[in-house]
Image 1: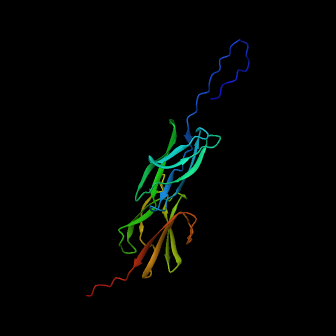
Image 2: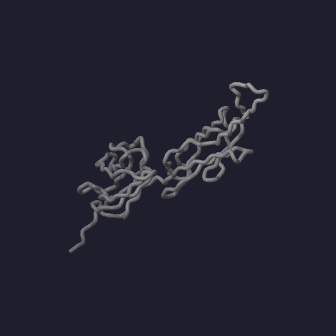
Image 3: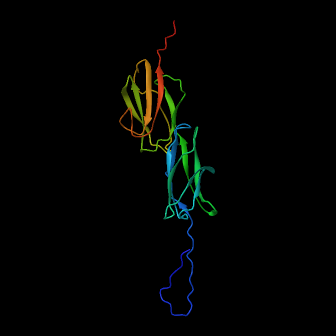
Length: 220
């Protein structure tokens, strides 16, 4: 424990006052992290401060122990964990760091995790019908776009709107395929944050297959 040094000592005895211990902290996290499946989840970088140098700490995600770390000479803990798995929807989660042997020196921070995905309702509809697009996880841009691809070429791109909330949600109604007389066969709908189609966009993306079939006219 460090002691305050007196600037001027004029008395025979000097009172030395100890500094108040500073509570441990963790830097704020990103607003939301994505979960694709049980094995593909976004990495969460963690920066903790004011732990005892050289004294091991335990790291918990949603109160489940995940790892042990060793603070550096400054009392900082720097590392990463994997965001929790989320099958659907979104939810808050916590990260806690607690010093071994001194449980009072602990810090907790929270954020959101979302399942990355897009759904069309109804899933079976005429191409010209307006269907509901719902999706989550599009946090890498101010707009969400739908790219309609057939035979390896993009045929049309439309803007679905502005993502909302911490986890980039969309909920809009659009034509299933906004193309007049779309060709029969397999189409791919790619949803991402990019205004220009790329088969490997820099942001996250979701691909959905759409099959256009010729419906025979009823016989008279």
